[in-house]
Image (cartoon, rainbow over all chains, first blue to last red):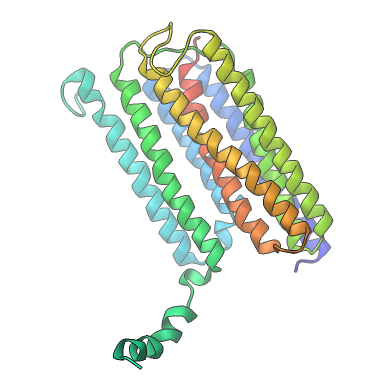
Length: 104
Length: 206
């Protein structure tokens, strides 16, 4: 059981993370209104989303307080998922360009 | 007693005694569910990205970001209220934990209501699963699949929040149950952080 003072301090930390997440979400909306080509826009938005997800997982889901082994296990899994998605997305250019990773 | 029983008995302490990563069983089960669910959403977003890249006439039907911005703020705020509920539960403040859990559920309902309103708006404009007035019909299928899957998760989360909250207040569940549920709720929030840029912001009509 936590003391009221500890509880207050933790909520203060949570509020900081919450405002960071709001700010990062705002950054995504700003990127959406910039004059960028879709690939660049996509890369920037995905990078911001990864940072947001990392903050939420580490501090909201308390992954940071779990054992290092578990943190490493989850990190490896996430990297695997993101790389798999990246492989699939880049391969989709084959449908339009005729070859994977083709320079058009 | 059979040889198998003897073997099981001989190893029972080793098999049952240690918990992987020293995480409580319910919490570990939720983490494993989240990991499996991550694969489901990743597959959906991968399919969506694949179709979007490969379709030259991909529609950009969203004129305004107001609705999705409000939905994002609501979902992020619901994560904060869920955190406060967990903190209160661990501090032993039962009524506060129950109150914040219910506030989270209300925010979840508000999110779902805005989502459904948006769906009806798009359906009114002529968008269905297989056709729309702007471009390839694949857009409707992928949009409704991804947002529908997310909305299903939010709806299940709201039901779970109401059930766990009421049972926690009645003394049948404890603070750990609230914490396990909070993991699920934060995951729903986390998925939305990827759905917004990929499905909404990349398809603005500017």
